[in-house]
Length: 72
Image 1 (cartoon, rainbow, N blue to C red):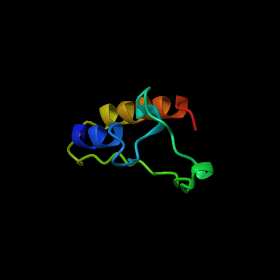
Image 2: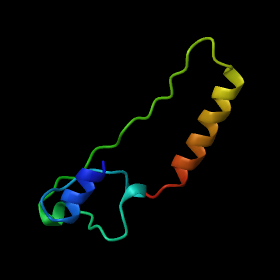
Image 3: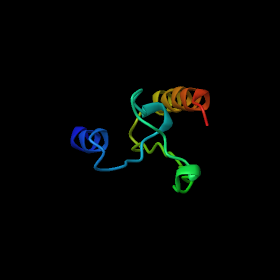
């Protein structure tokens, strides 16, 4: 990932990252600059059947709460 970030910072490339992962020195490209809006994504948490179900449920709840607080 650092090689991609270096290419982006040098002006040789563009990259797609989560809004929460955009570095402070980066510019978010929009339709105004000729870039299409990106579609929403789906996140799935899959766990083996032998996994502690209560633990997985708690992790899913924490992830959901965190993601709901993100902008956009």
